[in-house]
Image (cartoon, rainbow, N blue to C red; front, side, top):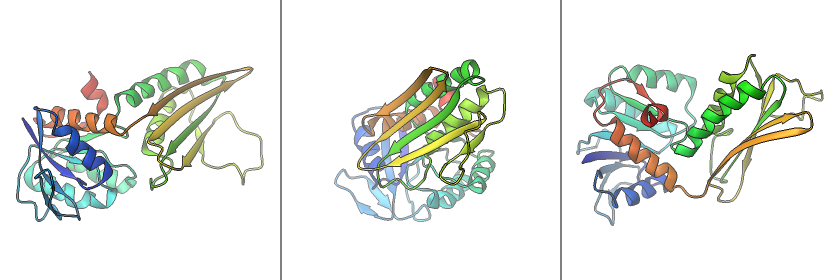
Length: 251
């Protein structure tokens, strides 16, 4: 049994993870950390911060937001507890802090916890190798109207996968209104849509002469991210240090 400390337990993803964990016999939410602390209906104790956390666990799962990162990293360094960091929108400085902490406690990072999205990333790199010299590339993502960062972390990860397959260094273009010029082949257009309750849509368009190749992923519920996070927690629980990703788990 893997005992999980769930950061952001009172949020939408936190509640979903707690719900699905209760249906499994290989993981357990031992405690939560959230500003909305106190007792929950399911009996899981919730603490207002990691400084107040009075229950230990085998691994942390964080689905809160980047502002919580400093306290999580401090707790990891103090206790050696590994962490699945599933939030997006980290700054370059925060990413560097994560890498340094991984020298002392294991970290699992993935821009998207869905297995399907990670397969999409592999397909994107392969398509870029085969089509990138002749086809223009555009990436479109859509999420609900409460999402703060744009483009999404997943869109950026997909762009990085595409870049790995290209024979040239691309230029990322996030808006074209001010450009007033013909599209350059080296560009990768990044487009973000925000509206309603869209869970997550990602599409990579390879547009060539008289033909278009499109690969995409559609998330129909948040369950896929919750299941991925719980499986990542199991994978990471006995790791002492190092950076890990979905690619490591899928091997």
